[in-house]
Figure 1: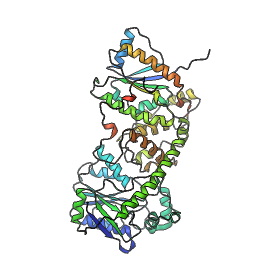
Figure 2: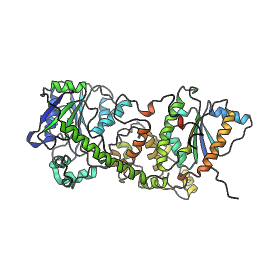
Figure 3: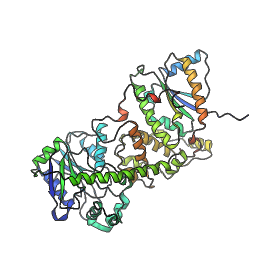
Length: 141
Length: 383
């Protein structure tokens, strides 16, 4: 049997919504793939572009930024700022061969434990289809 | 119709004529100081000089091909608080654009400032300028101007303007209070000054210059140049994209980078007081290098070069005005201007933004709208 590609995905999740949803998924005993490495941040609005660039240069195969639905941001508008930064990176990175779909943005509310588990599974499937991050083979960071 | 004035060129010396015009401005009650490129007597280095005594305008070199520094940063230092008088700054179009970006980032103010912009035929990179100045001495600027406005390409044999300038499609001083028009008028007996703002109108009126008709040749010559440059720009962008369209190629592109950060220092819009790359975050423990190398077999030293440049693209490409100073100061001759101009074109068009164009338009990362970019949200889209 061919060995299946096991992607590494870093997920920046906001404390108030998506992290809480992941907690709910856990307490509800919903499983999700071990490929996801959660990094809890206070708000998606604090995820500087360099965190994401760093993750890709270190060789991760996908990056997810996930926060509160529009209008629900604990800090009023951090998620809108995050969306602009994601737009920016989705414009820059593909120019250098890092596919746009390696970088994803979702809104998952605090009560969406089921949505969290499902989204993580679909994300892993999609990134697996894309294959390894081309930066992974580089000896320059 | 905005106010226009003719300035007749004395003794065929256009630089001196503009110098006299600056002197007239400085001697008026309107202006307390002038910032202009200046050549100290018997020396070849041309640098900006901040002048309050009209006599010190002797040696002003308003149209020199030297471009050692983007003066937007200097004007920002001069205007971030009230300087106690009005300053007139003679700037290239890309310096004006960079300053506009800095004002929007609260790094300067137009309140006590009159911007005098010139049509810009382009500038030389430092190394080329030094060689050129050595060869032509105090005639360097005159020699440059002889060829810069000529259609005869052969006469420009020892003159290759910087790559960023060859791809510059904004060579006229938009946003200046007073614009000095050269295109279509040079070589010739006169140049024209156009008031582009109310402040410019008032100053021009106070200087007592006779009103004139705007010469149509200026507009059409500028349009011709812009269309030639647009083509060169597209070619440059296509070549650069092809040279960097994979991570492997990008790594090659930057393989000579030594982390000197000159590009960051010279960049007029890279304005952070303390750059993250200068902090302890990048004082890695030796064991970290061992980990990096261990994971991939080896790691190119110094590290964090791609990280630095990609981060700079993310941080400033929406504000990049294409002045090319990053390339000008690179000791490893990495073609930075080409890449940053290519990336900036994409990121600015992603936000329908043009850096330096309007002082009222907010920088893309400083604002947002609630219902925009829906297509990038969710994991169902685009897969």
